Image (cartoon, rainbow over all chains, first blue to last red; front, side, top):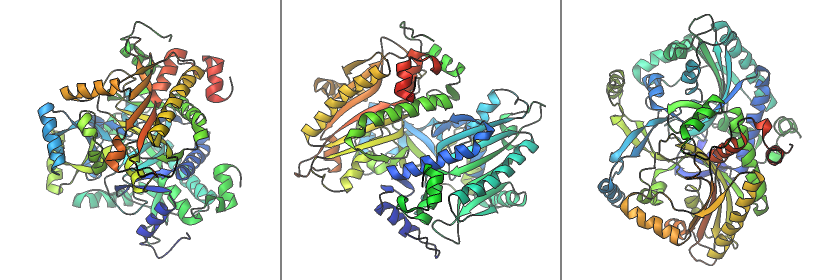
Length: 310
Length: 310
């Protein structure tokens, strides 16, 4: 399965992944099971990211795939990306309501009218639950803090592009401190990101980027974000060489989360934050796309990087 | 932190877990972050389960924390446990709707009225997405099939009992075949479950059990399940010695999923299924409860079982 530069070949790649058993259909676009080999590649890349980031002695936290709805509301996510968010709803009715629900299902009617929003929203990016957590601890120590996160994330954007899943895992390093501390961290990781891609023998391009802000007002936000260089992405051709896929992203939030959550430095200034995100499924897909579905035939250097032996 | 047999001490145990940094508050009962040590214990136990099950050469599949809503509707889960299910909803409105949504949030009103059910439901047990997947493959080979699953699961039952989380990970082995094949498999694992608990130096009790079926009709279903011995649980005292916690469960579904999904054996009979479930967070909590929060002080045999060295 060599890389096909003509692009727009999302369906062919998805079919090849199904045929190889790497991804497993669930009946929903962008929602796939994975076989043991796919998971092993993800685990090996996850471990590689750990090795690249070990010197910073990050604090490891793993949040579940959901977060507090009230914290989510306060995060501002719904201002920018209401279309992507996923709220979790649950049945709160009685036995009569239950009978109606079952009758609706049996008759093929919409049965979800009785579902009510719970206190939980699906995590949109691994770092969203972190900021309120850090704020609760009080002012940062001198030098700020560094976290190592990974969680399943949800974005409601059904797609046949296997590199655009609705449920996927994101590894992140999050640096919280002064503007100088966090911008230096981001610059370091933009260089490390290139080394990572080289170690995996993947073609890449580091470019300024913007988030998919909602609506007309969103266009201005996107332009501002680009003009200020707040977001960079490590792009790799996966299903198209024209529209490359962001496998890593480097985001400088300035004082957005510091202000919203009330995170302050040891000097009592509002803290700045930055995160480096690694799209685990996307990196695995890039590897299968460029090196083939037969892992034993991958370049020896890549095998050694991931498994410690060629 | 010795085990306290007086029970009902859920809050004290939860506070001890927060104080030790093992669990991290999110603002929602039953939804917690975990630190690196907690995750390491989970990973080590997960690996132990792999070692115990390796001889069966199971096929590894990892599903995301959500599954197809239409497959979920067909599974019968909503008949039995409507109160526990979590549907994922998303905003499908336009810019005017978005302004209303933001105004509702700003004014503290319910803003979730515009959220519409997506095609995704949170996975209630790791094996639910498996059965339609197996059915699509056609009749089973002779000897049936064995799967190794793990996924985040959701159950809407907010609780202050740390052993009753809303989002938690479940490891499962699922055996699909003839009644003789699956009942033998379950019997083998009930014995292995005891060996597992002994290797971890945890007190345990294997007992017949029932699922928390909804409503008055559910009581009959629960009684039938118990009378037929379809569900057994490996109970460990965690937050109460009177109401012990199911850390492992052994479920014989008879031909429930075989009929619903149309899974047939090589002899063209409806397949039977059984699953052995491991509550990963619950086992980790049991270990911290009985051996303390200082892992270095755990019994040497337990350390050796989990980490390969005392």
